Length: 228
Ligand code: MN
Image 1 (cartoon, rainbow, N blue to C red):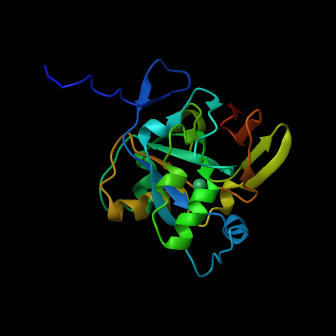
Image 2: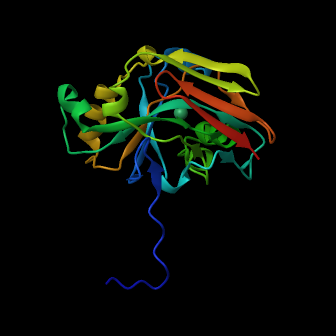
């Protein structure tokens, strides 16, 4: 039995709908500016600046339904996104084979300390302090591809206290799920347990303590998260 100098950190997991099994998390890849209208609202031209990637940490995926307002910010934004959970991996995966690697899908919120991200952008620095803080990705349970297929179209929305903030359609992604997996696999060796947050539609904005966020994606139900 392996001996450690302190208790080994727990394996981050996501629940799986209709199963007692848990999805063990490995890496968390996130796509930036994957919906044209959101790229424009952030001041960018989606024709000239294609999507790109950053990462969050597996232990920042939080399924508690509570989002603690983070420290060091006065401008935390919601970004509702389709999460793709991989059950297989590899390198240089062809787009035509990519969906075979998908275990399932979930709703996730790419919560962002926008003020810190904005400062980092201005200085040409990485985004970690804006994106990778504790509980930075409230996430719902994983629906398996056997249950829901491979959603390529359908409404993506987020309300705050019942008011519609974000709305889009999965069909409006600039890079679709198979293309994202294929592209990522040219830079990284993908593996079971990896998840990808596929970008957010337009309408991002701030929340404050006491707000109730509801993310919705067609076929995946709703994710309710209280800002505390
Ligand atoms: Mn995002």
